[in-house]
Length: 407
Image 1 (tube, rainbow, N blue to C red):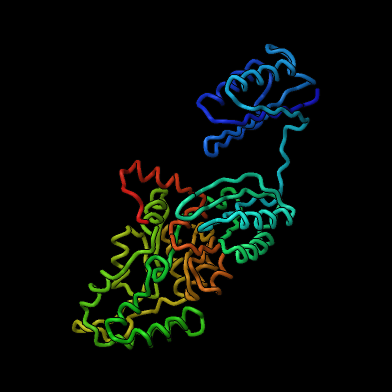
Image 2: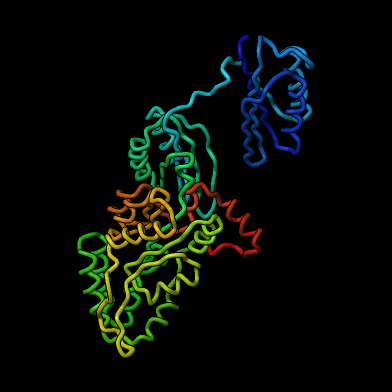
């Protein structure tokens, strides 16, 4: 006997009991449930149920195919819904190659951006299987489930479109590969916090302009970081040790930082920071945010005064990657399950080492090298790249009795 399918689609205003009513009707016929999809957008329901049966018509308790259709149509009318019916002969969906998640972030997200992105996906020969909104504020994030595409080729195409449309687009493989990110390693200056710590110190030493110039050269990759650090630290000679307490009070977290750390810690992620800055200031962040691992440079202090030198091995570009590898070993987590987040050339090695490298409001050289880029000023937007929605975050906060997030 031939295996046949019947797709029943209900659309209209949502109300309690629609799904149960439909399945109660179907229970009177000798059919098996092959697939179900349901979505509600602004109170409007679309419910699709694919059932399978053997033979030309599903005869039995409920009678013929016509009787099934009549029963479903009558139920839809009673619920104030529209119904469509289509038949087929194959109950097994062909698995398409290259199943991917395409995440789009915009503030705002214009129709032209979605048109351009979906057009590129179609031109690549891929198909959009599902679309879901992960966030509506303060940025809009839409996630598309895409099949039939080569990830590297699609990523390159969408990067061009993202630049043209001024939005962020990330392309990741679906399934366990995406869900298994369990160690987050983040840069500190201009990533976790909104400033460069050495510039805050330099402002008190009266050498801010010179330090800022050297910092910018290093961030662009035009100057060796270790040499640039020594040059900048030398300008801090003579500052009193009490300056650290003053600067701690001047540090401002990037919007969404607490939400990001709190949410991932709920999911049993390990969280680490690596910094070209200084332990005298990063240690406070570790305590405040409950961070698991950290690595930073240490300023030498003698008799309560900064000497203008750094103690021990400098945490530079290569040092950040080594720190990521060390944290992963200590946590018992493979590198494929790590995420690195940074903004400057000093972060390139750890971004390349991690399973997922994210450029956050980064220099062009970092954006080009990273797997994904986020250019909105909200650090918790990174949660969307991990498949975590704004609604899920807020629901978890509400269960814990926490106030509104730190927007």
